[in-house]
Image (cartoon, rainbow, N blue to C red; front, top):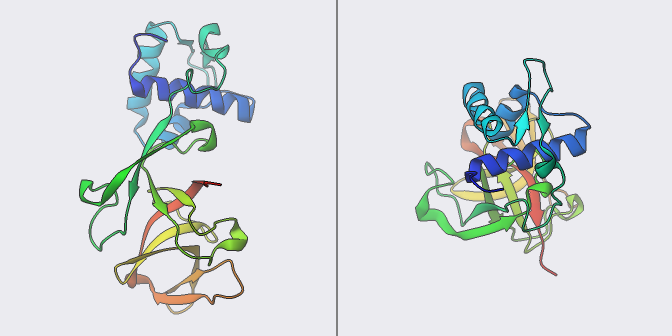
Length: 209
């Protein structure tokens, strides 16, 4: 696939994976949500890809059709580019997680393991066993997405008293937040809402054996 920018390659990979998983093409709004961008930017990318002959589409919803060249690509390291994700250390109060000062390097991840969530990502190495029964073990590298769309029960990266922790998020009475572990040896911790900063939602993980 020559003549494509990295973002255009990511768009094609996203569309292909979405179609394989959902059995239909994504809408413009789903693309915008998946990449965390405006619909006008999505239209610009789609128009560029259409001009280059990698897809066709009409004014109807879910009308994107990938070219045979893209559709026949097998999901291997040579066909769909890996996503490079910054690996960060401890997150300091008031500092964004993608700050260069916090980076320890990057990790590579197959976009197939990320589903629709392939933008605004960062990774952290887990220390401890408090989320063991959620399948998150000591030494795992968790991949999180910066998002404001946090729901009850989501596993999140939270910043409390200048320390990061990975726990399940639950609203609690009296304007508090419960950070719940997934291990009976640990107890839930309750904090005032204003003292907890949600840095991201866990979307995937990597493990070395």
